[in-house]
Image (cartoon, rainbow, N blue to C red; front, side, top):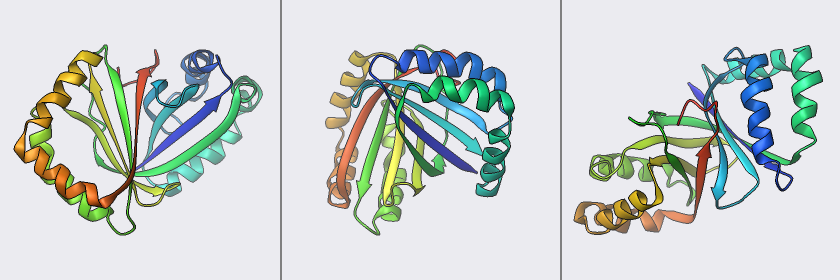
Length: 211
């Protein structure tokens, strides 16, 4: 299985319209026939004016075929592409190896936190092994939605996604984990492997499977 993370930077004030276009015209045209949509979000905290969407494909070759087939769809090229292109400033694509999930939260109505960790060269496997060994400890406080290791787009990177019902719950979880000795042990071992970190808060679009 291969996952694809697409990040579109949009003109100011157009992210909601781009998400609406994807939820209506885009969904009508492509459905799940050109890769399966796993989640679609707009950014709320972090870099603004972005939409973030995850897709899954059976393999890299299947993704190549899917992209080629989609480019031949006349409604896609004549209706959807012009609608999104006029709003676009930049696009990023990461191909991701899934490690965990994505796992839908038990209840809808969440916001999501997307975390990017740039690791030192050669440290990805060690970080993933350590993180997964301590994940049961972390999940005592909140459940992970997804964990990936970047295949291309950003080498030596891991990406993880979390959900919370509200900001107050996230703050409470962070306070609890700061008191957990086992999790603090993980942090002390993982920090030397990390070169940079980013955290984005995301709001799910109406058509996102992750709500």
